[in-house]
Image (tube, rainbow, N blue to C red; front, side):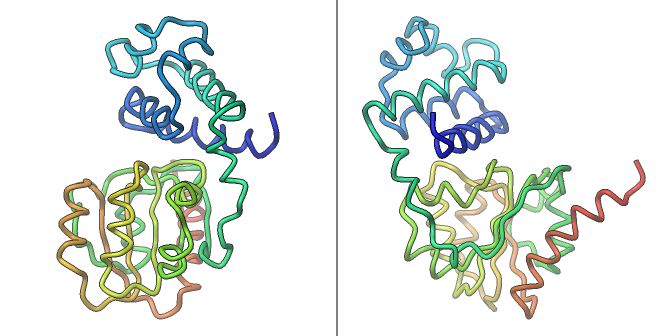
Length: 238
């Protein structure tokens, strides 16, 4: 298995393990890659019925070892037949992703709100949710240059993260893009808009995401403040 596929495997495993519903996440990835349940069961040398039980949640949540085997089998099938993951070899425009990083220790959504001096528009009840990473994006280039599969890349190693979109008009386009994506972040921050489209707020509420808006003058300060959060976390007494 190539290095590229190894990296893809790690990212998919991370997304599934951190999902609220592991079985549903397994099924979601299988369907994204257009792999039939019977073919995957054959690759895993288990019966389709057993595989169905894992995906439907009828069996106890599978451990990390099973998730790794499941994803590896998916990737191997894709290499031989579907070649969908091969499209990920085309790099996402570096200019679209302004900054990306992972947190070794979880940061709460509230801490991110405070760090970015943001105003919460939706998801107030979820401000205690843990955030494990961040991605700062140029919203115009993201929407114009990324396909659905490219969109996966902005999630780094997990989807439990905050996406910050800069150069935002009224916020509808980024939120709609997230709405149609099968992978969704825990939190979205819009940078710049004086007003946010009510539809964007309603979508965020339906998706159970924290949505906030910040007017920090410099884009560079957004990434800087997000990086500082990890350092501040490490300095806090246990």
